[in-house]
Image 1: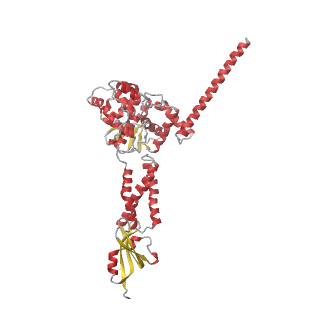
Image 2: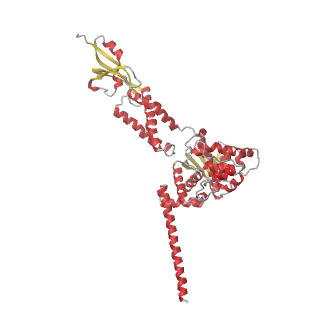
Image 3: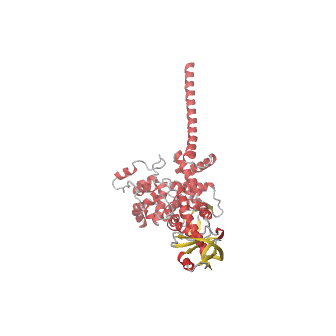
Length: 483
Ligand SMILES: [Zn+2]
């Protein structure tokens, strides 16, 4: 009997030890996994304590987040941090914008754009949070939310919360407004995701039949409000896509499938962070009656318009980088001062435009440097020098003795011809060739009368930016008839 008891006891101890070891390793694996993905792979700038708070908020409120892998969760947090940085959150009517509000509202945008490469919604800069429904003076009615064309989003916090508290009633204010913002970003031509921009027209074509039916008042799986216009149709489809994906795919398979393509995520595929599973397109394309999924997304630039910084870059390369040396040649800046002026504009412009361009991810840092050096700086410098020359705050006249002179062809690409360059006493204006230049023919017509060039009078205007700008010069001759 004793042997049996010891054997049973031994087995228990063995199993208990194994179970304990397993639990410890699983726990360690989780902690190290979180650490690895957050700190190493996604380089999330959050401390352990911040991570615990954000993770808790999202795990409690966001079913979407709960369904992600450790890697997916780290990516989600990474994008929330990035998104939050680019927006101002303003609490309205006495409400204080809390960390939880900022995290969850950013989460709605990140959820919507999780499959896309660009997720910042760069056109949008301010998010107003109201305690509950609010009155819009413009629309003269009470609203739960609104997305303006001028870069602001307004939300009723009560209704926002409701969207996530009841995850399958096809209502989600946060996703609804972010859907408007995502589409508006494309229509406004701010830096948006290529895939989304290329495919949007295609998706609208797929959805147009159902939309028209809704406009006629026919019953639909989609909420009636979607029939208001194409913008609301898209926003309502987004709500259904995230709240009731299975039913959506069953009832309106084409709209659902192509929405997966548009957003590059499939809510039904919970296994690998809602990614589009292998064979997704092939499976659909085999079925009769389905609108086929294209093998590759055709490029369609109908929505790709211009960011203002690119205009400045082009103006810089083709115009102002050529004009700047010309304008400098009219101004009393020597070589070193010109270089300081030019790179001062690069530095100042770089700091001031950083939030508008880099934070909003309009371009990479390398392109930003090229933009500053070849686009912004020459445009700013030539504008300042041009205004300095045009707006005069007074006149200065200076007279200098002439020591010698030399002949020069073409002073700069804009000032071509034959010139005489006068060398002045004490090397005055040695660096300022334009002020010492005199047209060859005029100079020699007078000089041929055997007069000796005596002094040069230079007229400057004192420009609005305090720089001397060259106006005109005259040579005085003294009679010199020795020979
Ligand atoms: Zn709407």
